[in-house]
Length: 289
Ligand SMILES: [Zn+2]
Ligand SMILES: [Zn+2]
Image 1 (cartoon, rainbow, N blue to C red):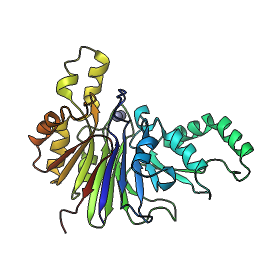
Image 2: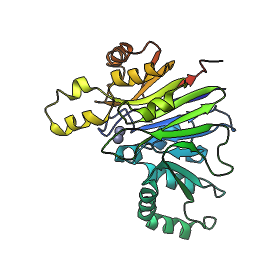
Image 3: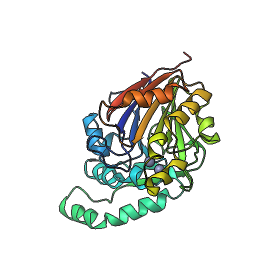
Image 4: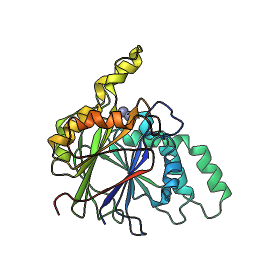
């Protein structure tokens, strides 16, 4: 078994009826022993996870690329649902850039009334949501004992300024490696993660469209995201076999303009280009057996 990528949410801050907010699942398989890593927790993440046949208790860890609201909107739901649907105390590990602990502390504080109601109401629930936060900058990501273990996770700095810090993650398993870039422009940290990997999951915005929208607040987003062309250049530079695009801005209609997006990337990258709707799944085979 190799790594599988499931695009749980292919949307962005702009609400779209058919696309959940940014969230990607990286799994080592489908059986009971499989590890499941959730990258970002955007709008509707647990609905999409349920559609993939999984729930919050199945998550090995949550890894945040940055603290933009659209990427963490439903983190509170992951924390609460994991807590109330797990019958032996199983800490939820949340990995993220510096600043994650503070955000999680505030989310937990906002959940205080709910936590008190449930502890008062359920005799067998006598602990608060157990959450472990690990803040990372670059290098190896080490999860607490007993969590994960078969996937080697590394991270590096990405460039989403003025959102600082932001990080990307690389997952190595059974000879395959996939990178979750998050929101970033092309940068050395992302290049380092991609070197020798097989695939990258990259968030993108259509700069050719957004640049022509007469609204400064939309145009402001141009300078800290990659276009499909730039994501393709990053994938090409690293010699990857697969480029997986997600976080479509503006929201792509279902079975609509997919070919336009693919053509923009294909001008810069000869490998496989995966573009899909929520729940699109890609198996990552090692390019070097
Ligand atoms: Zn962002
Ligand atoms: Zn974003």
